[in-house]
Image (cartoon, rainbow, N blue to C red; front, top):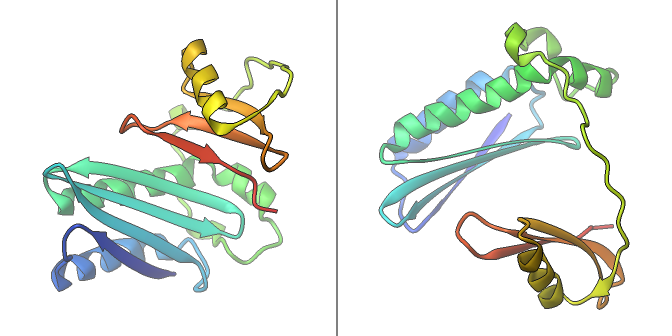
Length: 176
């Protein structure tokens, strides 16, 4: 697995980069060599933020952590990613049984409490209304939701607007 490190609003030291690469080597044993881990380090409001994303041929693992100590934050991100992989090992084996991206023998088994099946507890149908992004944001706020699905009248595609942790909004668009 290759590790690509990007930093925003500060320069990461060589020691920090080496530490990140060595920590992610532990996760590398679960993947083939052509898988890439993108690690973004950012300084925001005096706190350090670590985000890691591993795209393994259609399965995306992602973890983030905000901390005052970037080294402990890296440890927690690696732990979160490892836990995700363990927790979904059986489902990943079913999905990727004939692929070489994952090395399942190296994935640890999940503790029993994490091995619970995920259950769909509610299904809801609704009409897709053509509207602009601004109208969708307004509708989301009026409903008091954190996301809203709508038919974008400009692109004629299904989109999702969502409220971000920083109070701003995001838009999810399909990429065909």
